[in-house]
Length: 73
Image 1 (spheres, one colour):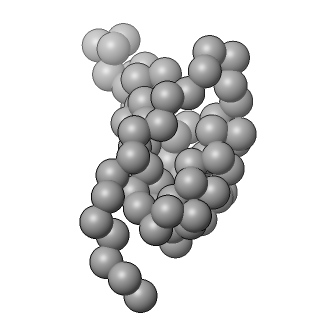
Image 2 (image 1 turned 180 degrees about the horizontal axis):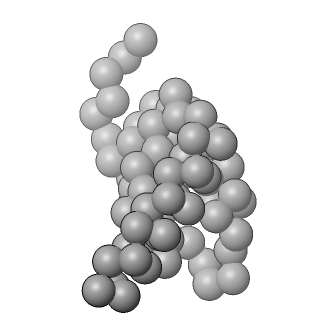
């Protein structure tokens, strides 16, 4: 396995669902063997070529909830 040597920044279009964004980021990471970074509603996402779809979606929802709770304080 080659080391990841490149980071790609993925711009997510308004109205995109997190599931679609993760699917596309995984596809890019696998195709280019790189790390894909993007911001989705204030949550910083990092997707690798070995990332698991549901783990990333769950991470997003947990982090978003954590940020919302923090903002309420």
